[in-house]
Amino acid sequence: MSAKKDGGAVFPWGGDLNECPNFFKGISKRDYFAAAAMQGEIMAAQVDYYRMQSTYTNLARFAYLIADAMLKERDK
Image 1: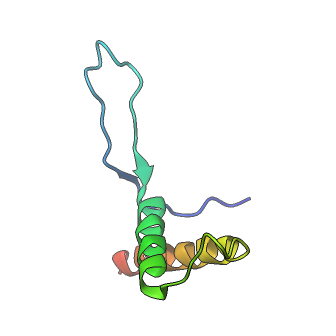
Image 2 (image 1 turned 45 degrees about the horizontal axis):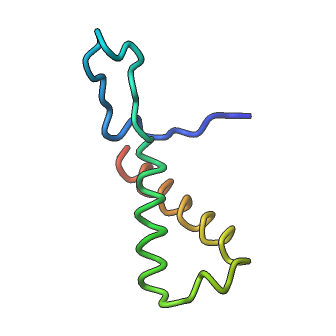
Image 3 (image 1 turned 90 degrees about the vertical axis):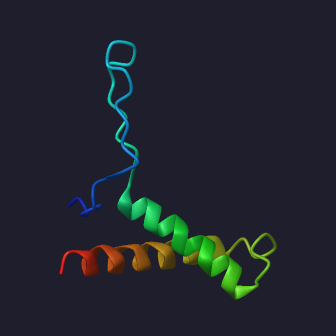
């Protein structure tokens, strides 16, 4: 399985390395973009996604397609 480019970390934080030796990378830019895209789609569609549970998978796929396009555009 090939790894997708995720754009690196969003909101990385190391904290006090004496108290917190494990570095927290944050979520990936891809996940962050996908979450924002999904939120925007839910708001724009004005669809009751709570009643249309079968659309969750399609919504998630759509959100990651947008996120991948955003990452590709950033690389130009």
